[in-house]
Image 1 (cartoon, rainbow, N blue to C red):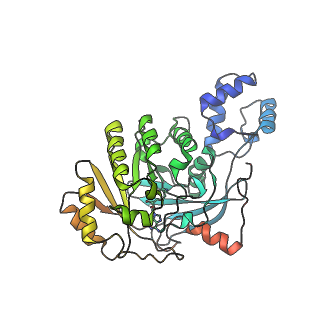
Image 2: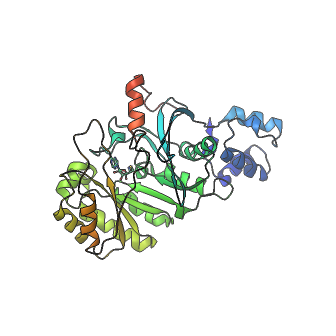
Image 3: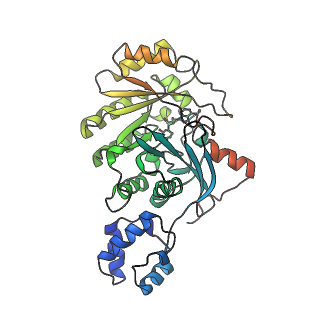
Length: 350
Ligand code: SAH
């Protein structure tokens, strides 16, 4: 069966030509899919015979709301979606003054093993298809009625560990006949897979790359993020400099503030040294406490920020939204699995 929503209009065109269909059908079908129809019968301007053929050969992904939590404080909505094979992923809708932002997941679980992160506790179950990442935008928009203007790839999973599907998703969501969100309104966050950062640079996309740094020295970073044991901070920063030179896009560095681990003055000074000579921006994230983890939120966020700024590094503190609805990404899926003793199948065919 063909995952029809993962195809771009050109690819759809090739497939439809094989079925003996005129080129304009691909635009019709693409538009229907991106509006969120869930069956071919809803595509009322297609000939009946074509609808029947599509039904035989293709499927349309459509996640079901498994759980939904809305913050009484700021209107943030967190969705837990159930996918075709029973696996679940999270999406968060955040309302800012500059527009509505959706935070999407790109994998079921994650293999990166970061010590502070709830998404990685059960490892990776599977990659999401381009359609399944896109659906999080389409169905969040349909369910909430909120028009989405920005996307952050900061949900469950490591985007660069699902490279091809994530790139295909970016082209789908960016397409003028679809949801049409500009690359400059999209942020992609990575734990720092350097070869893939180079590969991304070659594509020259105008998105914002966020790098999860979390520590300026190898000792601390390797403790928090196993990925650092293979690729140290120096190589990561060289790669980031190269990324900026090739794309002209400033990188945003994420830094989750953890009590007594990475929040000292010395570490702030090291961070300043690391970023010297390259335009970048530091985003300080007050740690979201994960039940299973001994790590605690820092109490020195403002001091750390001041110390960076006094040495010429721009640093913002991320505003916490949805504080009353299960905090950081990965936690809702995890709780749900524990409560319902869900054992979603590994790598089940879609
Ligand atoms: N795999 C990608 C995207 C995942 S999450 C990455 O590593 O960048 C997006 C951001 O949230 C990352 O910077 C991640 O390190 C951070 N994060 C994960 N768990 C967190 C927690 N408990 N508190 C604060 N930030 C967290």
